[in-house]
Image 1 (cartoon, rainbow, N blue to C red):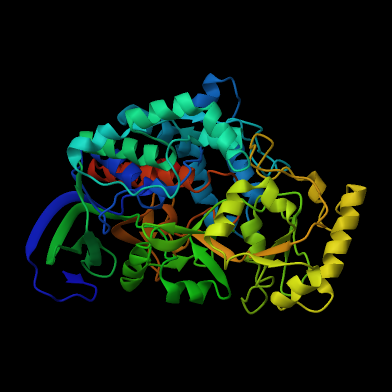
Image 2 (image 1 turned 180 degrees about the vertical axis):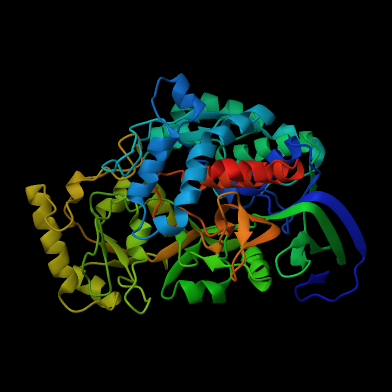
Length: 557
């Protein structure tokens, strides 16, 4: 037996069937499925806090052909979901991702039904449509869900600490998209105050917090062991194509944990690794919106033993606001740019996109032939009317005065941003002409419905930028999660760069070479697929342990 790079004395040797690295949605879904299948499971989380990026999220979950949609009389099928994934994917991706798309499309509904059966977690549909509505297989409703509130008391006797949300947990995702809290925070809070006070008194968690609470409760009920402050430092291997366990550090001890069936890497992205992020995402970065523990440990360990890495230039990217999380600066992922009197400009002072497109992150990350960003640095430009319309934005600007640039004239604003003389004035004048006509001749923004008409947060349209002071805010890439890592097959097994499978090694979520990259197909196409890929890994492990896996492979072929 060998291990990658660590030769310190081992304090202890432990055994189990399955090791899960990480404690986010993908990790806990894998653990839940493996444990329900009778395998002994140990979850290792390097932070003192459980839940990863999932716990910080809004909880939006994209699951095609699910049973809630069927109950509501909404027609859908795995075949239509696969058609939509194929139609919306970047050019050339089908050659490597089609088998994974098919596995997701056929397993997503099974995952959701399983999670609701074996955990207290419950979901409800939202009214959102697939945002890429013009493509084959898109649906007007039925694929987007979000978790219902769950009581924190479900886990009180465990003594676990969940990663907190950067925003209050009182509102559900359904309320966030229906009530327009961003533009009318006091009005909504007053109107919903009885409901919110009841949740507060009951200590109910919502959104990603509810998801992690439910998954952890399910895993605990099935006997999963959960260890926090346990950083996995290396994979244990036999030969070049087999993983048999991990080594992890816990309270100063180096522990060897052997896994009879396999190891699932679900440790999140690598956006917290500044050096690796700069290699794959050169150019300006505003904020990282995920836990500071997302430093690519899983990607590094898999690479050390020969895993093939892919999609390292893919990520969940957007704009973000300055924020503080657990006393440290971070980014808050809020769609503050969906305002009629706001435009995005590049370093030449020119608009470069429809500001309201769903996959704006893809435009922000557009590259030239050398891999450098085409449009960055970028700025959101607006006028004083923006702050009147968005009181939450005004509050953030007051708390972070260096973030927003203000000027009495567009020429002064352009000078402060080092934009070419006259360029910003010309761009705004052109945009204002479009506003007068009600038609954006450059990008046809007037046709856009952003994430969909069901989301009240987004105020589309065209409104002149005329009222001083004029405003500018940096709008470069902010990372919710990178989406590159070890390439897997449709069963979640990690591929070796020299060919073949690394037996005993699985990967799920944003730690894997995710088959849905920067170009998302719905608001929940991080969490929905992540949960599903965790489930697929757990299912494969159960079938492998029962000697059924080769039969399943024959059926799939």
